[in-house]
Length: 381
Image (cartoon, rainbow, N blue to C red):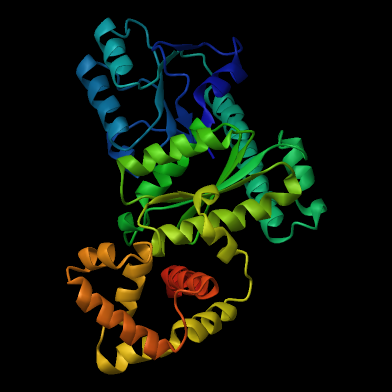
């Protein structure tokens, strides 16, 4: 919900005697503004605040350096401090703030802090309301797509038009959950909001839901793939790109499918719906009970035999099919002699009581193994 420092600074223009002394800090995100006079109150800040100070205690470079370091330690986003007669900022302190990318402003004793803070607060509150409205609009577009009146107005007022490309991304990093929340997830959300200007980001059940507008799928895959390669504890599912605002819910559903498969079936922490192959067909079935019936009809007797006799015929059959039904290759994969495998394959044929090598039955068996790989979590979604 933060606003770029540049936007706040431009809002006051030359109306007030404020001067930014540091360079390359305009991109800093500001979440709120506070007046802080004494060091002991700094730990009460929440982070991302632009801090105002009267400068009454600014009597040495050592005091200012310590004050800045304390602000940085709690995540404050900048400092505006009044300059009293006979005082000034040394080049060293400005260079230090530039080095740590901490915006430092000077103000005159005549600068009406109360007016500046009110103006900044109005902008921040307006931006927060905008974010709140966009999040509500996105949720309505996902859950009530046929009710355009619930979301179209808010979207179009903020540059999200009816006929644009939209892609939904789902991201989680539950490893970093703590009793006080998930700071890593929060930070990632802030970075994504800043890096993707045309986006809506909100948290849902410990996951970030991200709507990217006007971005190429190739770029999204590249950027989020990079995040997942850097941190194996981050899981991402990317939905299909749709070209109409009313179809955002399709992208959301597909992102959810891809995300769930990273958690259950496919040993990757990053998946795009476009690369799911046969799982795209399986995901389109809306009645999961059909899956269980299909698997039971195809492999039920073999599963029951393994359970009762403690055999591993299911694993053997799966390995056989994964190796293109080649006895030689499957026996190597299973570390057994080919004659031993032939014996076990004959036992499997007797248990199933059908020709496992006919075209239809081969398809049924492979489909059953794909369904089993979806896992119970998929069916409980």
